[in-house]
Image (cartoon, rainbow, N blue to C red; front, side, top):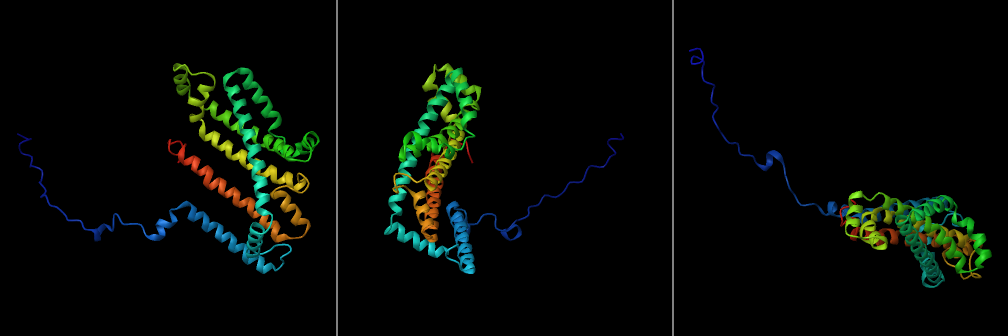
Amino acid sequence: MADAAKPAPPVRAEYEVAVGEAQFGEVERPLSAWERLTNVTWVRRAFIVAMLALAWEIYARFLDNPLMFPAFSEVCGAFYDAFVKGPLLGRMATTIQVLLTGYATGLALAAVMTTLAVSTRIGNDLLATLTAMFNPLPAIALLPLALLWFGLGIPSLVFVIVHSVLWAVALNTHTGFRSVSETLRMAGQNYGLTGVRYVIAILIPAAFPSILAGLKIGWAFAWRTLIAAELVFGVSARSGGLGWYIFENRNLLETANVFAGLLTVIVIGLFVEGVIFRAIEAKTVRRWGMQR
């Protein structure tokens, strides 16, 4: 009886409210031309480079000392003259040829050593020992010995480039191989993969982010080593590359040409990093979902 005496709960009337765009604003709209432009990576980086060039030009004109610090416009003029009429193109070709030779040789040796390291215990101990011994050793410190062993020429430069590339690439590659999950390792072993086939089919794809990082570090080390070696010692009786070009113009007090040589090194580095390595990333680790 007590429950029957309780009043029934009130019933609310149902109604609908029409929601317009004016109440919430525009939910979806097309991007403006400026927003689409700033979403492009190379545009943003080009803007940064342009701002640095502008700051360079303003500071050089304020300093008004072309011998010590030429303006960016003057350096661009010297770069054009040296590239079109002067020896800069030939020097650049010489440097790239030597660099690619040493870089490819270092990569081949690193591939052999890391394959042995993941295949055998003695190979692992050998790589760990050699890396601990030679990786901290600056490559430029070996150039006097290279000059004694191979003479004034390209082989001595290739030797120090191989040293600068080998240990960085081998260390990053071996670290990437060791980080491969046990599930992938056991899957490869269940398929009967051993030796080189096991490395190519299982370890390299899984460890490719670390391998790619090693390739970038090795390339940067090779660049720095080669330019420093040519700056200090030159090569082949004044027929060297960009480093020797910078060294010559420094002796002649052609500061704009010195900056033009440095600018060439920077441009090549930007091209390799922003075009070649970025294309490799897009075709591999980004497509595989291993990198954002």
